[in-house]
Image 1 (cartoon, helix red, strand yellow):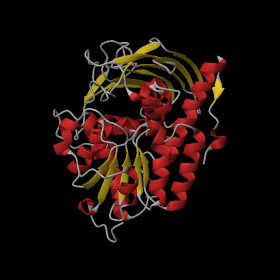
Image 2: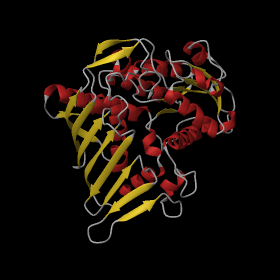
Image 3: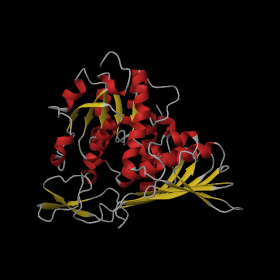
Image 4: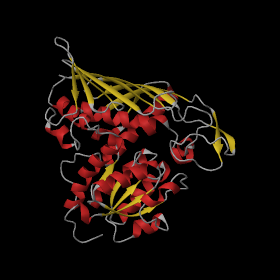
Length: 392
């Protein structure tokens, strides 16, 4: 690692994985003025060849990138099954680590990572970037201030359609790389993290129904890029699918609130729609990622309100996550910039702050505990408790 880091411009970063999300990381880091000095392919990633000019130098291997003494921090944006091992190796090499979710594929893996990260004194974060839409930051601070009274019910969904057809394919469909949970782990985990972040309450019990609507898919010989549609001319073979296309989940929160979540990657017409409504004893908030600059505020005895993202009308927490002027929509790519700005403030300081504003490995571990309870509930047909006795 470099000896002195005085600003973002002094930080040298490597990124493992140059697919869809790895490129989102690289672009956000560059917007912050952070040096992305190397990248490594996490697997065979089709679709990046056309973006070669935008890529940093490609390391000969993941090992070479992790062991490079000039690199201060590493972003892990590879397939799910290698997240934990790569993050652990980065910590062992003295690197700050920013890892895509899920942090691992089992709670045992993630618990070990939390313990190792805490021992290391290094900065560590998990990319629950949905928290960093400015209006979600504003909403969380408003709920904490009592603007809704006591939270009572959280409802919503995360819906996509990019895996609707039996000819749609991505590595997430393969349990060996994506894990036994798919729609729940891939996108449902974002909703669950956001619901806990905004409500200030932990999910303590779950009741889940998971289903695979496309039991057999055509797997192409060449791995397609994430979100790429099927290539009619590509040779393929039929593969049985057992992980979840969709889910319906009931939730109980620690302080008595209840929740209902619908997740689907086969919802025709919904491209990337996370919606969340949080109702309280005196009011409600509603937000959707497809209209990210609009927050609905519901009332009983007065007209409802709509807040457009506006730094002159938001609280300080929302303003801190805002970059663009009102009317200039801040979207998905901007959430990575705001998340990384918070993380790299600690990297420049040389250690995690006592009050971190970004999700850490502990949050990644907690997400794994919740999703494992969801898997157990789907198998048992009963309410299952989130086993936080495993918390590191």
